[in-house]
Image (cartoon, rainbow over the protein chains, first blue to last red):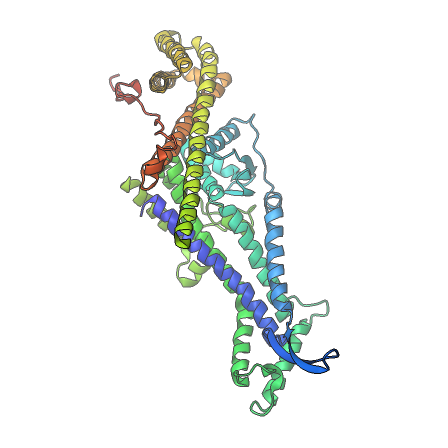
Amino acid sequence: MNIYEQQAENRKNTSILLVIFVCFFLIIGLGFDFFLLAWKPPTVQLKSVYDPHTATYSAKPVRNFFIPFGTLTSLIVGFIGAFSGYRNGKRLVLASTDARMANPNKPNEKVFINIVAEIATAAGLPRPMAYIVPDPDPNAFSTGTDPDDSVIAVTRGLLDVMTREELAAVVAHEMSHIRNYDVRLMTVLTALVGSVNLISGLIIGSRNRDEFGARRNSALMRYSAFKLSGCIIADGASVKGTFSNGKAGIPPHVMIILFLIWLLLIVLSPMLSSILKMAVSRQREYLADASAAELTRNPKGLISALEKIYAATGPTTSIGKGIAHLCIMDPRGSYMEERSGLAADALATHPPMQKRILALKAMAYSR
Amino acid sequence: MIVAIVVLVILGFWIAAMYNGLVGLRNQVDNAFRQIDVQLKRRHDLIPNLVSAVKGEMKFEQETLQKVMEARAAALGAGKTGDMKDLAAKEGALTAALGRLIAVSENYPQLKANENVSKLMEELTHTENQISFSRQFYNDVTTKFNTKQQVFPTNIFASMFGFSQAQLWELPADSPERENVKVDLSF
């Protein structure tokens, strides 16, 4: 696969994942309306109306429309979450890592500023701001939701160990995240995962204990438990039931099973959504590696840079796991790399370093 | 009748979209060329400073310095005529002369210790990279523009609307930048 095919493939996967996320909010919201608020699809009923002029009764259609509060709330919370993440993401990320602007009077920071300008020229984009994170472990990240207003930050440890060529490769990797709008996508995805957690927390009940040590179950959860027990006690065949409430064609026991599946989904949703986010993140890493090789026309520079970063096994302590997906390597260090298997794969923000290096080597040979 | 109108309207929209796409690409090509120009100008301004800074230490390399200054003058002259092939050739010669200067300067350790010189050398490396990356970007955009004009069915309309192929930034066959690097291993 060449660079351009890889880019196309990655874009396709990303749009599929985004659709799945929207479905997530819809399922949560629709299920809430359907099961707990007894929402019915809009119906048209004929109502007889007395007309005083002609002194006759005539049939007039009346629309019954029930506002789907749950769906609306779910979508609005998701949208607001995404929007606020979009607006404040860059400021929060820079503040949380203690990043400061690179100083052009220090020789090695001047080299970094120059390299950022060079790679921006190669990408045909405005020059991002260059920031330094005071941390001895080599790592780098980018932030900012728009190529016109973005930041590339590297740790001091990275500046110390990289040659000019390798530093250019790392900057090109971050520039690709900016150029491919990965930073925007990942910022919004992070906010979406946060919103899913919030909604799930509201429905299941807060996972924090209150000051008396008791688990606070939300009123919503107690209400749904009440409804569920009511339905089990009632004889499904004879009672229209709290659950069937007029939805002809769906027997109560099917409703209960559907309800349990939905509840399970709500409980699992925080985990499922972060697995999805990680999958997106891993896809974008391959794309950024490929684009970096394309920008510098030098896959070998990135290969040796990745090998150096991989060799430094320590975690990057000043970069929190919340922004791991923006880094060139998972800041939690190589321990994520050493665990293999399905679980570790699903929870990693980055593909295994060996696989990334192999993909780049394949590119270097095929050129 | 209705079918014919629908087909004509769709065709009209398609031609408009194609025309706008080509105009956008042509402007990108022009802009990318200006970027090369900006970087070349930077290099021309930087060279006199660099040469005067290293002149004292590199007494035995007057010839190398002389060649750099000559190549710079030739490139400045070519820039005024606006002939792109000539400009590419002259700038290529300047790149080669500067490359030699950088290589030779490695033999003078006292140059590296000089803060002013090392600053200028980093500036030079930076500018050389800027030139090669802006050249690369120009060629990428130009290739995209040219390909767009050549593919079917755009090729039927492109020349009708007055679009022509843009020139890639290439080195002429006899450019000194193409010469093999001679490595002297005798001590």
